[in-house]
Image (cartoon, rainbow, N blue to C red; front, side, top):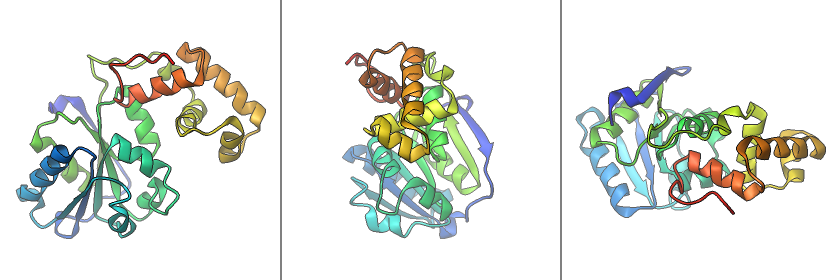
Length: 232
């Protein structure tokens, strides 16, 4: 991955160094999972790190429950989605409170990166990145920095997503989890009427007729299903 394609931002404080660090990989593609694990296990900069990998969030449950300061969690987009709505105690706010940092292997546009960052993700890396880029991602996170890929020229962000307010981003993200307006209202402490107004505005800004189209646009911004039509 080209160094110019990454932006770095400071976060509150650095995690512990690699001598005490744990790296948890959750990726549904066996070859990709093995490649990331092998790359990080063999990296000189991470020689003392404890690296483990799993196919699903369920498989990684015990490791995630024990995750704390100095833990780096690298997941694919499916695992992130499962973790983002996980009621089992290993959700993103809980992991961040315990000092863990999460990175997602995906190819988002600028809006997708913003959405992930707003959801507590500390880093994003393209699945086609060079092996060394994965090592640099982990060392960046251990050093207290976040790393997000800039918008891809080949996949420009949907102009509509960039027009959404922060509240509308939150509502759209909850829509992707299958929540109805009443449930979204309860989650955000809003009235159902207010949520309905926001949903209507979201559809207008995205040029969509249905919620399913807006959800597809959201997922495409995260690098999921770009080649397919957003129509539903």
